[in-house]
Image 1 (cartoon, rainbow, N blue to C red):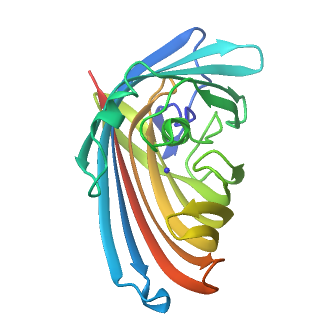
Image 2 (image 1 turned 135 degrees about the horizontal axis):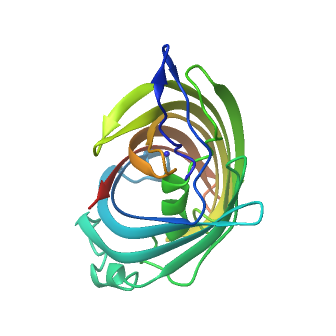
Length: 259
C-alpha cells in the first residue's frame, strides 16, 4: 500500500471523471489486515533456517479535514489484534495502541507529510497505517491517468530508511459500498538501508523490494477498499561475526471500510 484514493466519478463516454474533494471533512472507519512473513537463512552464522508469520488486524477511524493547501489527517486507533504473533511476543503490548492518535497533512497533489503518532503498539509502526489509508492519488482523475510518486521514509522501523518509487494508473471504475469508485493500480520498487540492534549485536541491513497496490476511491475522496503485497530481499550483516545473512520479507495488506 492515502486519501487520495480519489473520488469516483461519473462514467461518461467511457471516461471516469473524478471531482475535486468536497469542502468539510470525511470520516471513515477501517479494518486493516496486515501479514508479514519472514524467512531467515542463518546457516552462515551457525544457526538454522527460520520461518515466522506475523498477522494483525487494526481497527481505526480516519478523518480528513479540508484546510489551507490540502487536508489535515487524524487517525484514531480503536484496537489492534494479533491474529498470529511470534513466540514470546506479549499480546498485551498491542493493547497499548488503543486510543493512540496519528496526525499529519496531505497536500493538493496527494503528498503526505508531518506524520507522527502519540502512542505505540509493541513494535507495530502506527504511522505505517496512514500510508496505507492516505495514498498519493491526485484529483481530479480520469481513465488512463498515470503518474509517479517517490517517497522516502525513516519511521517504519527504528534505524531504517526506505525509498519507494511507485507508478500509478487509473485503470477503471467499480461499485463499492453503493458508490462508483475509481480504481487506481500501482507498481513499486524500493531500496532499504539501515542499522538495527539484534540479539547477536549490531546489524547492517540493506536490500530491495517490489510490490503492487490497488485502491478504490469514492466521490468524497475516501478509500473504499484496497489491497497490496510486496517482497523484499535483504542482506543482514552481523558486525561481530562478520557474516551476512539473507532475509526474505513478504507482506500483504487488505483495507476494508466499515459502516
